Image (cartoon, rainbow, N blue to C red; front, top):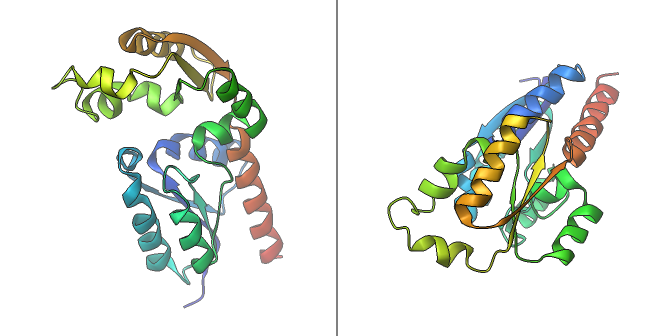
Length: 205
């Protein structure tokens, strides 16, 4: 069977809205997106196998594949698997790094190692993924265990939204953390997808 004339982007569900927005704004019709559950953020030990299953299920169906995950807490296991499968991913340790840019993220981490980060997706789903996902709503004593060593919450915003900033500030207050907001845009996510799209167009021509 001939491959589809495009690239499959296997993405974390937390990046779905951003990838679709970038595909639309930049007119990248050859990017096909399949997402894995965002809840895997809380179970990084499952990410590698889930991505591998997606790759193998789609092998030969597309001109190329690209993984829209950073390492995301897999401790190098994701990279080892992707090397075997000969599929590339977004560079970086996690989405906070590729949204902010490595140098900016390093500076933020050096300034305050005890920083908890939010993106647009995590702001919108803070209660579901953090408060409920970590069981804090059912066991309030867990909050100090999870966040006792944090001092600051930094919201790395992909789009400018007063509503999102207000929600992120409320999340910081909920956790008892100092608040900071930075507008990052799409960072290396856009750069990586642009490079992938360019490669597909070259292949088609």
